[in-house]
Length: 92
Image (cartoon, rainbow, N blue to C red; front, top):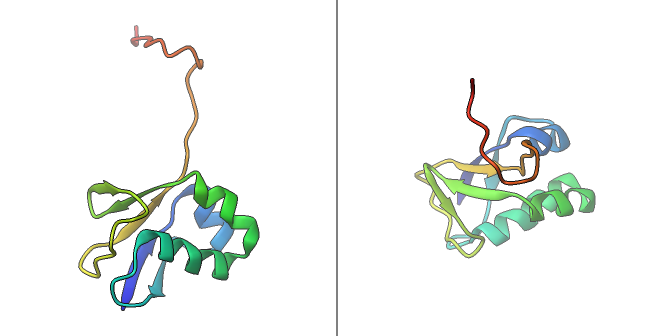
């Protein structure tokens, strides 16, 4: 089956595209999709993908989630920011 994958941030840069179509076996999971992306991008992308979250449409899903061809899968790379103290600083 064919799944559309939207790529963001460093994953987009590593794979050289903002979205790709990926062929996977019927009933495949996000974990299997990750394996296909590693095949395409090389082993060097595996550590980055291991820190990413996944969304199926508007739902965040885990790696055991079965893929659905009716929704776009989105790779959500890790983000950083803030002061690391966990303190909210409202805008003035």
